[in-house]
Amino acid sequence: MGLLYPGALIFLALVPVLVLAYLAKERPSRVTVSSVLAFRALRGFRRERFGGRPRLDWMFFVEALILMLAVLALAGPFIWRSSNPIAVVIDNSASMQALTPAGKSRFDIAREKLDKALSAEDGDGEISIYVTAPQPRRVAPPYKSLAEARFELARIKPIDAPNDQTTLSSFLSNLAESRVSKVIFAGANALEAPVPPRIHAIAVGDAVANLAIGSFTLRREALGAEALHASLTVANFSPETHTLEIVLRGDGKEIARAKEPLAARETGVLEFQALPPARVYEAHLSPADALPLDNVAYAVGGSIKAVSILFISPTPADAAGLNAIPGVAVTARTPDAYTPDDLATVDLAIFEYATPKELPAVNAMIVMPPPGDAVFGLNVTPAAQVAIAGWGKTGTLTDSVNFRLLSLRGGEYFGTHPWMSEVIAGDGGALMLKGERGGHRFVATGFNPFPYLGKRNLPMSVLTLNAISYLAGLGGSSIENRTGQPWLVPAGVESVILPSGKKIASKPGTLFTEVSEQGVYEMIGPGTARTPRAVNLDDLTVSDLASTPALKIESASAGSSPAPVMEKSSLSDYLLAALIALIALEAVIVYRRRHRMAEAL
Image (cartoon, rainbow, N blue to C red):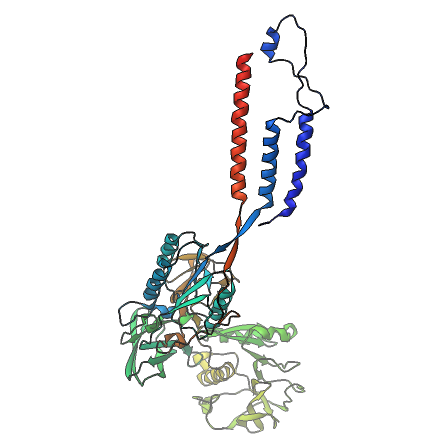
């Protein structure tokens, strides 16, 4: 036995104060009067005096007992008793949606076995229920009764997010060392021996053949092109060869179809060229199999990342035409306003008639640099008119460019460079150089391809697009979001609509954690503007239902007999009940005494 708050015992000092209160109680005295009528009307004069020997009747001892019980209740007395708390852990991850040959899902089988295991317990302890995905957590406070726990277990559904295997192993290890008498874990993963004595494992991850879509990404083939290129990873997790068929839909309409034969446990990649523009793309795999979740994947055309360009020039108006290129976002700045920190948020930089004071930390294009450059070491010879004399082997920068139609104005020639090679040659030296330094790509031109005029100067526009594509890596790929992985809420987004249709308020710059469903999320901004975002399972390890790895549980008590679980049982409730009973008893007795005295008067 012990006390949770022994400091509360200081209030026992109030007992002597109660004695002092009795010293000041009313004292009877003899008085000669002519009539007692006034006394009966006024209930008598009350005379009190302090001092003398206190008359401690039974009420004093009752009130002292009430005071001491209140102080003890505040001190929190408890006793130790053996307990049987149970922790129930059910795997609710994506792989538990897989159908077994019996026609039931892994999750349904796990829930049935857990219910049967709980029914076999004696039910004299609390029952805590945990789920594993996307992160292990308790779903509700501990349940006192078996019926409540079974009801909560029946309400749990599997989600589209995978387990974090490392986190799950650590969680089960900690749970086995906590103050529980037993941990009942039901999931797809078996446990490696030795298993901690307090863990009772129920494995339902029998091998199941499965076909799956992994990643689904979109990208632009070249800057300036509206059409997109799709790439899908597919896998055959079965012991037989299968021909997988993928159907692509754009905004609900079929836009492409392809087949890919895959041998047993083989992974392949399907490419789809020149897809027409669409808001949302869906990929559907056939034939049907045990896990429908990974037979569909989503991508959003609007999620293709724009190439961010910083244009530094004394004539920033030359950058205006670049904004017309699909997939390009341009910020213009004068050399006086430029600082190296400006490069932190861009993909590449273009320096027109200027050079930086230090080597840029991004890929960069140097257009007609002034003489005396000390960073790149370009040997510049100005010329009133430059002409192309030849170009090298066709590559990324020269692809599809008709150099005979290029009309160049005045410019400059480059001399031999120590680390940049010649791409276009002129009569007086090189007109275009390319090279790599510090892990970044650089292109230098002795002529000015800006402003960008599009079809009005098609040969120069193609050369410009080639240069930007070379520096930016052919544009960006679509943003890949996976189920269970939070993402930052973009600026201006006020709420998010889940694939299920549920609307959740959001705050820009915070993590959005409600990502347990596969599908398309609608981000709502000002004026009800909607921006879609695709979230996929995209985890072939989860889709491999034929080989589920066992979990390694580290436990200091592995191999030893579990120690009995002792818990504190509070006595404060009993003390408070006795306190209330004594107060009620005293009130009844005092009331009856006063009632008799009133009748006597």
